[in-house]
Image 1 (spheres, rainbow, N blue to C red):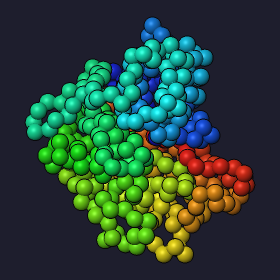
Image 2 (image 1 turned 90 degrees about the vertical axis):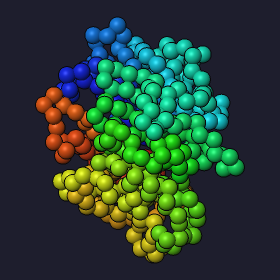
Image 3 (image 1 turned 60 degrees about the vertical axis):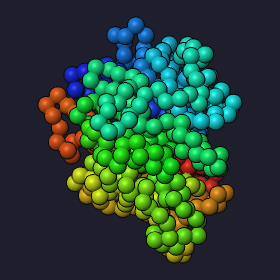
Image 4 (image 1 turned 180 degrees about the vertical axis):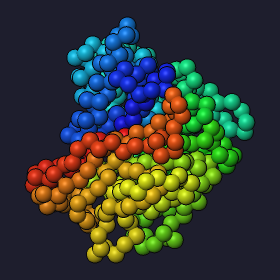
Length: 378
């Protein structure tokens, strides 16, 4: 999951942005290369600033698929003598190896690592109840806020502690918001539901990245791999989060084809579909959990609502892939790309113009030695 926020003061997208904010920077080194190149190019075009500037970096938590590309990005930004304006770190229990990844990036862009605090308390607040939220970064009318960060999940497994403490970032221009929840779990969503008193987040949520790449395990309250039907699980918290608090007009999930974590899950995506806007018919790829094991589980779906994943199409249907299992047959193609949201424009935008899937390329499997786990992220 890698998200670049590009702000243009006149509302018109162009080569040089007036402000750049990077929210997370993770994924596969192979398929994340396109994201790294795009970020470097956007920073390099900012020739009117004192230095080629990446204004803000936020890492939601310490998982590799949210910070693992920082090392490569640092190397690329160093070649253009780029700088970073400010850095904010979310999530609890950072281990030394992941701290070192961040520190190496900061060194490459000549940012003082001593000013960065890991496992830090919330640096802004979104209290709900009509109380004005604070922000931790701002450019003109665009504010960066935290709904929640560093939530403690007592008694949970280490991975749930990391995911549940993920920073949930809100990008707010006073009219629309985009919500970037990292790997938020049902515990994180419950904290947000409670904080907002069950009321809808304001301003309206134009777009939402589905928490934790559309994972089922962390979306429901009583996950078991042996569940056979949707009714075997409790969906109350995620349904309240989706349909009462967020009410997103557009949703997306960032995950690669046939990844062994089986993200995104079609049934989780379905929870977030009810409030989305109409869109031109298009396709997305997801994993179907509630099927007989003999049936196809990875599939391409057609929809006329504003729902996207970073894998748009598979040219074949695939069964679940277990860890260390053989990869799909040589010759299998899949279409990957970036999901682009526009909050506003110089002359205003129609709803269908506010989301776009930009294909990056079509990958072809060449054989069993080629690892396919992740793809370029939005």
